[in-house]
Length: 464
Image (tube, rainbow, N blue to C red; front, side, top):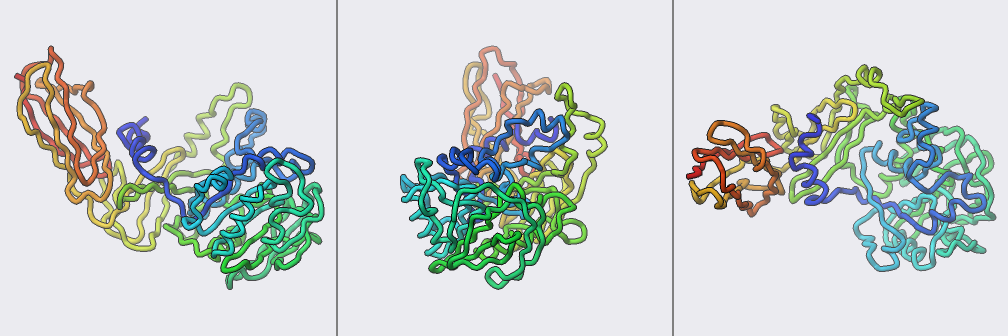
């Protein structure tokens, strides 16, 4: 409850309703038709389309952490991999494409994860996205079916990826050897037990690797952009969050995103300057302010379920509840404010936070130092049954602030019925404080505390 208090005090509303979750030019296509075709014919051998567990209880009984090892869930593995690299994405849908709601100029990368069913209209928009400079990435079997889940004689995007799909066959487990360049950046790694599609032949695409006799990581230049067919199910790709995964696996995906001109908004590092494992960062924008949540560790200590009754085993969790440092490096210096901390970092390009399991650390990044809130009362007194006006203002506000409003009675007791959070932007805010007919007579105190800085403004009024 203590660690989540900022969320209850207005941060939840600020982030979920009043702010925009950020993406780094990466979109993932969610296709309703593909969610159906993934269960047809050879599709299930490549994993499942759904991101939700259908057998979480049985997996928990076996000690499997479904959030880290989502066996078969390709979309969830993409989520994990993108965030493990310190990036963010958002979804677009095939329906958005058909209705003209897809805005390709907002993105540099479009990911087709297990998009086995693609309509002609969507296929054309995907081709245009690549031709106009975007990067299209598919893991397996893009466009084997049309939007009605009917098999196609020729896969809808074979020309885009420079390949030919020769059939609908089950996945084969092979060791992949990858060695080459992606837009001038060298990649070299060995990945065992990949679920590959053997029914793929090269036409104009260039394969950077082989898994047995099957080409993988196929790059095809299209117009001013590119298309990359990994040709393996992402659910068989190594987990980039855990320490035992060699960094070359992460460098492969980093090279793909770098080739698409994706810019890193921050880097999460350990004490040695290496990519920090088991940690994620999620960013929101409100005005010129950016709120970042850093949380983790995300290792196997999360899977501490009792096999019989589903209760958490608390002793292992308590043993793992040790603060761990994360060094955050920004592309340019910002003013850094850690929510709930007495220590103000100031203006810097890098800083360190200490995270604990299940507890996010929230920081605010700003171009200028955050100013103290101002609280004024146009009327200093009011009678029972009347309303008292309160004006709130943040000088030089760079975005929305959440201010906690607290009122104290004449006998110095908290008046919890007045507790509220107020969103205050550059234009300030005005609220009414309705006084009950039987409100205590005397001198009251009202306080507004900025959730970001913890700094307060205070004023007094009289109930007469």
